[in-house]
Length: 633
Image 1 (tube, one colour):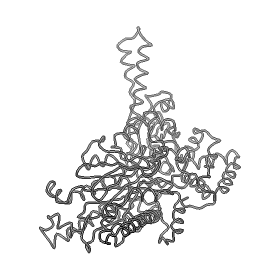
Image 2 (cartoon, rainbow, N blue to C red; image 1 turned 90 degrees about the vertical axis):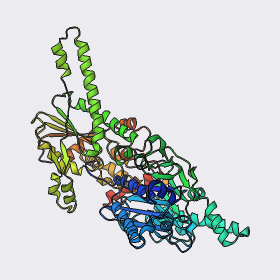
Image 3 (tube, rainbow, N blue to C red; image 1 turned 120 degrees about the vertical axis):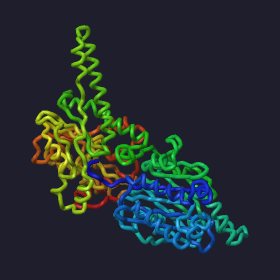
Image 4 (cartoon, rainbow, N blue to C red; image 1 turned 45 degrees about the vertical axis):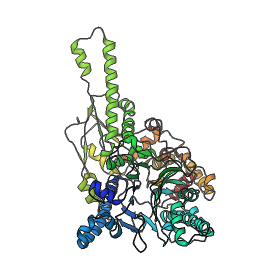
């Protein structure tokens, strides 16, 4: 994606299933689990750069000892900042206590983060930006360990208002309206209820308060708490939590919108947002890492028992296709194949666009995240060229000469690396967003490989959202190579609708496909469509979310995808361009061929998996018409 948009958050939950002394003896350090936490967070750096945090829970610590530790950072490099804070605590302890630091049991009693249970989080801010108060993990502390709760998540809910008001109806007075605090208090309420229920039960059976505490910690029904707390949640989520006495959980939304994977053996249980990071950190095979299924939760009890529990009725699987196209690490086995397939499926259309003129066509990609799709495109083009060569040979038999065969086989597609991003220049420009005239220097081009006014450049991108970078820099930079024509290709379909499940794409006015459709309506004297959509959105504004339909689809209905693509190309082409510009998008059909198991395509089709999605898109349209530059949820 040549223009960065906000990604999703990332989570890591680690439970060591042996005493810390075990890891000291086997691996030479009781910090083995902490090192794994750092590695798992760093390997998911792609998922969060606005903030990071880590928390830990020590099991069975005596009263008066601090059993929950937490550090958070919204620094420029938050992961490193978090780890540096933890190391600083350890260095301080080592300076005072020296060799005692090598004693695992002593460290657990006296050193922060010498723990059996860890929770790490990487944040991209959608609510509250990168204010430190919104950086996870968030905490709800209590003198009863079983009432203390630490949580972190990769989520956005469309109905925070409903959940917030339900807390008010219970008599609570939440201290913040944010989605994070609302979810924390929502789960915390049902945790309190379950603890209180068990307390009354054991009190009636004649146990002492001290005995009751132990029984509650042993028999707390985490599954029940998750079932009750999630009933009203509408959105995409993976929520991880640690309870002060040592129970832990990770729960996933029933549509499977947000991703989660887990692995456990007799030493460790780990849950993370991506499969390959677990493979790398724990050194296990892909087949050993399980996907957490929609509507399920991994629950790890204090005694180390790990179970996969159904906590909410699964719905039609609508896992996010943007995970496959862009967000997740391309080192995942399946995602790598899917991204290649996206490029492969574009080959016939692109060869048709150039009339099969392989000799005068140069294929390339921008940015680096599009490289895998480019490899697939290369494979697809070569496959078609070989088929054409084979057909020519068969058609010209038996009159073929060796020279003619050599001539036929000499046709070779040209695949080149045309652009290189200057990271230092990009960082410099980011420090002053007013320097638009500097944006054109973020990329360098490779000169001398394009035939002036003769070649067509086909450049693949993984997606086109706003088109700002294309207009401000990329097209002008490529025009310096003096091609006859430039075709920009998106391996994703046109992004037409806002996301509300974890990615910061919430404003319709930011999408070049939407603005192109609006311009087409105005040009063709069809502004009544815009007025009618606005009227319908307003009429539904205060209906229950379950009764709302996506009215914004009518904005696109009068036009073909090709008409909108042509308008986008016209809008994004700088006035100074000499080369002709065309923009081609992936089709919805090809998206589902390439990613058959991840059908969440609401960005492209407007088919939201939850009722709250329709409410968000209509509200976003109202905001656009009324000139409010704000999130729609």
